Image (cartoon, rainbow, N blue to C red; front, side, top):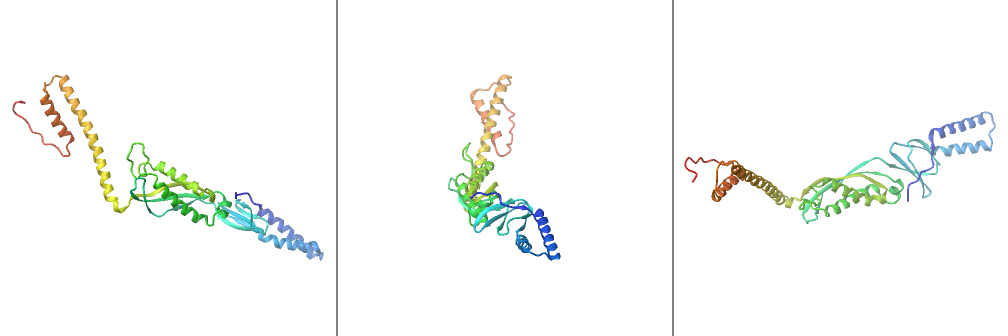
Length: 281
């Protein structure tokens, strides 16, 4: 069932017409010319009064007639329609939904805690009202289901260079989550404007172990960079000593010098220099 425009007239124009009809009825009564037409016009005026209704900004009226959908009115302000139409109010405003923190396993089987914030609005009023029993509850349940399905598709941390992870690729993960939720809510006439992760953490039972692993990985990465820089500096020092002919070192003394420089450059603590006052050999 798709949305279509419902029958409605400008309420102010309809009100002016009703006033003219009332003036005609009064003139007939005052002139004592009450006939069948006067009675019919009077009944028509009374029946027409329930046809007036007000549509607030960013809201709509879904109208039915004896169980059949006859259209939706989105024009804000005073409106008039056939009085026998039953009108149901539905909001078109943008809403937020924040899910509860749920515990799931990521792509590598690690238990994590995750939650999401979904920004959505009703796009098709007919589908929202008639295709699902309660579209707000439908949005909440399907959003949490989509989040759970998305969480098990990606790892928490990045282990390979081109691997998409929940923690390191928030933009890609948000787009994937938005597409997953939109696909599930398509039948309910709901449009998803944004979906992003609001909470992401390891489960308490493995949080300490995973923190130690992250620290170890950071230390290894830092050490690797320090060693690369130290080797480059040692190579530069040996080349400059040789090019400028400052001192000639045999292979054994070069190895000793390389060892000392690497200790100085790669040490966690400041090294204490020792001055050799005697011969180098």
